[in-house]
Image: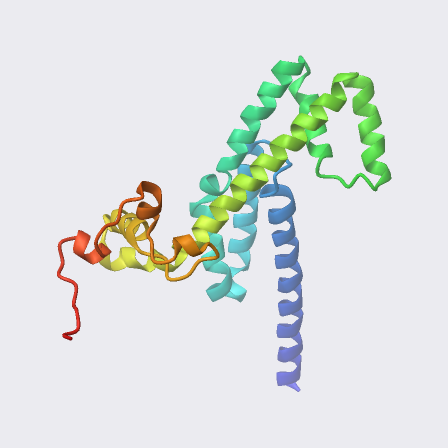
Amino acid sequence: MNHLIAAKKEAEIAVQLSEDIVILSRWLKSDILSVTGPDFLSRLELMRFIVDELKAREIYCSHRIRPIRRLLELHAENLLAFVKDVDLELEQLASTYNVDIYLVRQAFDLQGISSATCVYWQKAEALYHKVGARFYRLQEDLKELIGNTVRASSIVENLNSRLRNYFFLRKTIGPDYLELLKFYINHHRYMRSSRPERINKSPRELLTSQPHDHWLECLGYNLFKRAA
């Protein structure tokens, strides 16, 4: 009986933990790391709140929660670096259209609401009365800003996904590993590609149209070659 009571208690804790993590992850995705949203300092404060909430729950699942909490804690400013650029762009738009930055931010947040909802049109109408005919041109510029930010974010994510497999090298190579990694990626020839002209060519060869030796030979090593 005691085992059953303990099991039920553990199950309740696990269910509550799961619900809490879902809510925190939703806030992180929709309110903090989304393109639209508050300014940099506000998001940084929200990130600290997420970190504190995760830390309070580490006791229940440390091996899964702690790595994520540490990542958010140590790299919060890097993860939110794109927001600084967005803030500058919004200030520039406010100056260009001679509109209060508060209204520009409201129009910016409006882009994160589906136009199929009544809320969107209610907010859009209210903003139009405050901004005037400039509202439509401002909206177009905001859509372009969001499009450019999403594309830039996708490039960074793609690059990070390619580099992540090499990050373990820093434990053995030391602080200069990034220079070696950069050299390797620039000189390593593609084994396959959707573009036939890129196969068996390195990024450097494609950029300069000049061939070079194997990347190990470029570093001064003798490449092993099987005897004929």
